[in-house]
Length: 170
Image 1: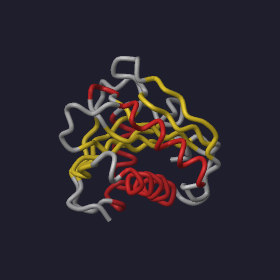
Image 2: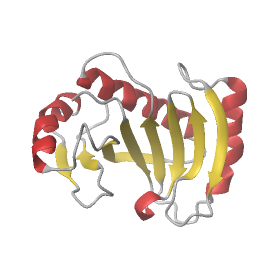
Image 3: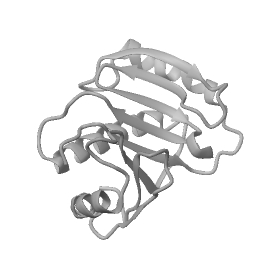
Image 4: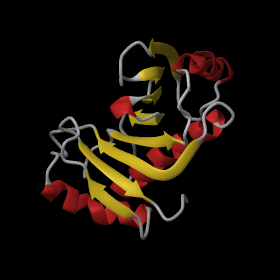
C-alpha cells in the first residue's frame, strides 16, 4: 500500500453527557505549549454544531486531530495528511503512535477505551473500499495488532474502513 493518508479513531468510554466544546481550550493549550512532538499545530476549528460531524478539530500541518461524534460515536480521530517515510507497517505504527500520544494528553478530559480501533485509508484511489484491498492489507494490520479481530465495514462513506479489536494495545 502506497498511501500515507491513514486515520485512526479511538473510541471513548461511556460518557453520554460529554460536551465537545470543553476540548477547545485543551487543543489551544496544545498549540501554545507545542504539546505534540513532530507536528506543527496551527489552529482549532469548532464544528460541534454539526450533527455526527467532525467535532472539534486541531489542525496541524502533518495531520488533523479531532474529538468527534462521527457516526454517532464519541472518540479521538487522527487523520494523516502529509507523507510518512517507511513501509506501510511503519506508517501504520507512526499513525497509531501519534493517536496514542494525543490520547494520553487527553486522559483527564476524555477517557478512551482502546477496546476498538477504527482504521481508515482516506485515499479512494490507492485503497478502494473493496474486498481485494481489505485482503491485501489485513496481513499488515495483523503484524501491528497480532491476534486482533479485523473486519471491513463496506458501508463507510466510500473510504476503506476497518474495525480492529486488539487483544491489547501495544
